[in-house]
Image: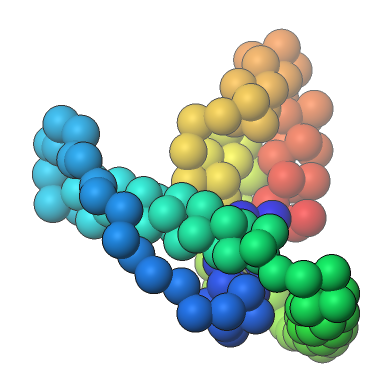
Length: 143
């Protein structure tokens, strides 16, 4: 949902945005962390400004903007559906499937990019019985 919001904001559907808010930087361990944190904070500032501007519009302007957003969202869903239905699996997907058979929790971690509930469930299922872990990892990787 956050990607769709950023997409819609980048298309300018909520109008011209100003980034006048001051940003305080937390403790940063590396340059990669700092760029990710700045990007997240800018996304929050942009979303807050866009929401504030949207609320200041008249009722008719709000309806027009919402109609534009619905149109773009419908086009996005259609493009996503057409792209995933016609696309062949990529090399990384095939490698993740092989890895899901050999080491299910690692495949889930690589697919998700973080250690979250799906990873822990995959680890638990793999430790209890290997086959449910494999089935769950395949489900996560392929959906």
